[in-house]
Amino acid sequence: MADELIAPIESLERPVVRISVDGFHRPRSQRVHRGADSPEGYYHDSFDHAAIWREVLEPLGSGGSRRYRTAVFDFRTDRPVDAPQHIAPPDAVVLFDGVFLLRPELNDGWDERIFVHTDFEVALVRALDRDGDLFGSVDQIESRYRTRYIPGERMYLEAVNPRRLANVVVLNNVPSHPEIV
Image (tube, rainbow, N blue to C red; front, side):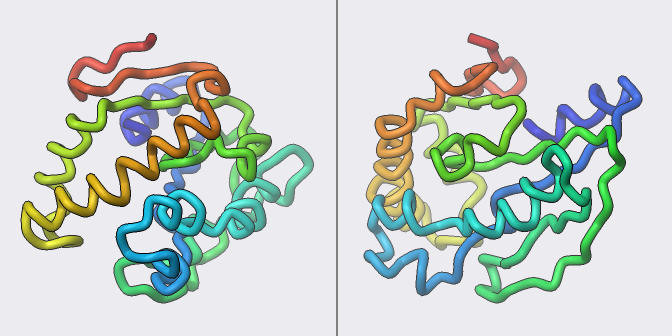
C-alpha cells in the first residue's frame, strides 16, 4: 500500500523516500531467543529500533542531516548490509512501512501516522500465498502465523492501541478497495 502512495505524492511535486521496517530486523538469534514461535519474541525482539532512529528518524527529522540509510540488516541472509547512505531532498516525504511502528519506542518519530488494519484471517490467507519461500509448507505458514505472528500482533494492538495514535486508519481487507475508517 505504501508503494501505491508514491505516485500521488510525487504528482504534488514532492520527492518520496521509501523505506520498510524489513531492512531493520535484528539477527535471527536475537529475534528467536525466546523461542521461534514466541509472540513475545516477535513483538519485542524482531526489529532494531535504535538503528531506525539512528539511520532514518534522526537524520530525516527536523534539523537532521538528511543523510539516511534504507537498511542495516537482511533477515533473509541473516547478515548486516552495507546499504549506501542517501541524501534526502529537503522537502521529501518519507514513506516508512511495517509492523509495530506506532509502539512507544518509535511513535514520536513520525509526523503523520497511518495505521493499516487487516483482519487476522485475511492476513493469514495472504501469508499462505506469499510466504512459502520463507516458511515452507502451508501447514508451517499457518502454524507460524497462529502461534507467533497473530498473537504478537494482538499484543501490539492491546499494548499500543495504534488506532488511537494514527492520524488515518485504513481497513485493508480488500486491497483493491481500502476503506478509510
